[in-house]
Length: 118
Image 1: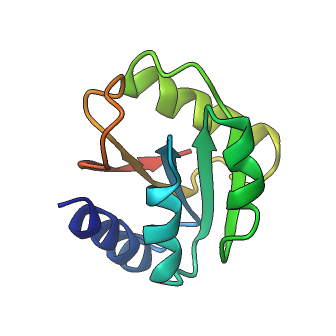
Image 2 (image 1 turned 45 degrees about the horizontal axis):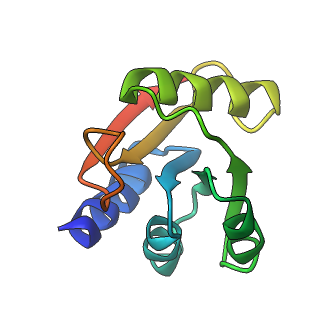
Image 3 (image 1 turned 60 degrees about the vertical axis):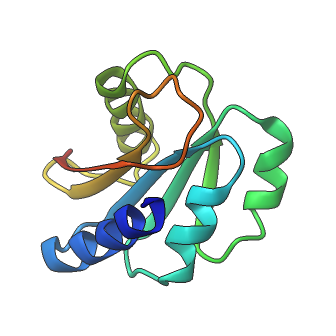
């Protein structure tokens, strides 16, 4: 199911003109799956595993950030929006696609996609 969700995220990004696709990962699966579709949108992956940051730097098109406050889906998406806008990767009004596991405290594969506006 996760591959279908991540494929849908890439199609949504294309169809909405999204500038960014985001994902949260504990093992890297989300990054690898999004990357394999080679979306035109920038890919930003957030993880709580510092060692994984090095691995993710080798994945096509992926930029990774350390993030360890997976409290709720809404607060995590708000934090990601803040990080990407303050670093200049998103501007007000940009469309971006979020992928995650619900509930976010589970360490499973992506089962949710959300379209957001910065």
